[in-house]
Length: 145
Image (cartoon, rainbow, N blue to C red):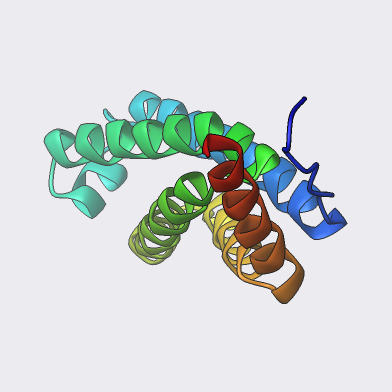
C-alpha cells in the first residue's frame, strides 16, 4: 500500500505550465525567424554583425527548448523545474527587452514575449503555486521513506 498523497494542482499552476510551454515555443520560433534575417544590413548592424545575430538566435532557441521541456515538470509540481524556468524566463525577458530596443524594425513580437515571460514569472511565485510546489516536494519526500 502506498502512502503517497495526491496533491491537487491549482489552476494558476496549470495556467503557468501552459503559458511557459507557449512562451518556450515562441522563443524557438523567434530564434528561427531571426536566423533568416541574418543577411539584413539593419539587423546585422543592430547585433554587431552576423555572428551576433547567430548567437542571439541560437540562444533564443536553446532557452525556448529548455522551457518547453521544463513546462512538463511545472505541470507535475517539480520545484527544480520551477527554479530553472524562473532563471530561464528571466534571461528570456532580458533578451526580449534587448531585442525590442535594439531592433529597428517592428518589435511587437518581442514585446509579446516580454509580457509572456513576465506572466510566467509572476504566476510561478503566487501563493497557491508556492503551496503546490512545497506540498508536492513534501509528498515526494514522504514517498521515498
